[in-house]
Length: 275
Image (tube, rainbow, N blue to C red):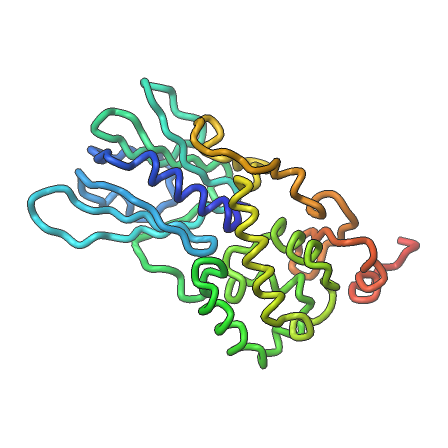
């Protein structure tokens, strides 16, 4: 957490806040983990893109001297988020990077657990194509690697591998497996086909349209703004995550699944019912 939808919503929020504004200066906490950000010259404009679980900030100088747009790529970790401070609002605790606009409002990176990381770089080469924005590339990449032994893992475990399912995390894999009706403990090789891959993208897109998962320490940054109409309640949409049978799998994460597959879980993970 945050997963694909939450990173994409963060992108939308940054673009909404930064539209028409110029960053005049930057201010940092001594605990900042975003590498080299202090090297950024000002003034500049900022815009954002997302790809899977990565967020890219594009900095464009506003001076008369032309300079290339710089990409600063970060991951949000477990709790990273951006907030917009207006009217001299005090910053939240654990605020680590302040983008101060010419109107003196601020775009602030807040990270309670300090797992968020970033640097001036392009997209991480070890992360696969975005399953929604670049579906054809995503599908081709999966099929190109189906002969690898890793595809003998249970599909529920492989879904967490960012090399192939960039953007999928714990709640998305639970809903992908559960709502598609597949046996999540079957080898991925036996499950993956065009229909399944399309369903992966479908569930990811739905989570975004439902405004993402305001779970734990991440909240939808639009929650205080009256500009986003949620089409349904996200918690009601979740059918499996946090609600059904669960097991700690070999990824070390708890996985929630349809109880009808309990026998397969017991067999695969060799659960002793007397323990």
